[in-house]
Length: 231
Image (cartoon, rainbow, N blue to C red):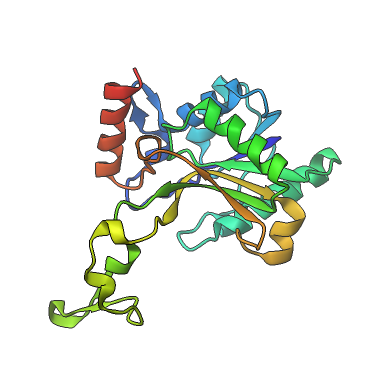
């Protein structure tokens, strides 16, 4: 299966995070090395507009036949458009037909090779349109509040009864994407223009491997986990 690593140059939360030194090597290198070890990944493509990212890829003998256009490297550019653009260009360039592909964000360095392989295996066995890695939320979503002017708060789920005051154990488990692994059927991604359909499945990962780095605090926490538990 083809793996795509999206790694644009700009980042407001943590500047140059994709090439920032993470426990001895560039952050993106952790994702590259994990994908290279996977027995189910046949090709790796990095969608980037950053020449420094390209140099790192060259060290791993990963060829980047085209750069990501500036129109898809803005703060408000949609990730789904980046993936569709990459697959379309690769299909045209190599005269191939890519049916399924995996997306591995470079900001999730703590995933294991087994996560990649097991997610692909589950995607195929379930005959999914898409698969998204997720983690369990630590608290009930019913507790989420919206802060208004002057710190006045309101419940987001206002239609929920006063059982909102129940203990955590009273609620069913909920999950959110952890930013680590996405697998898509290319044609269905175009058809629905969405990550989700009625045939979308979750690959559940533990909290410890679900850090998605967006800020310096995230970065330091991921470093701590890697040094404390993965080395």
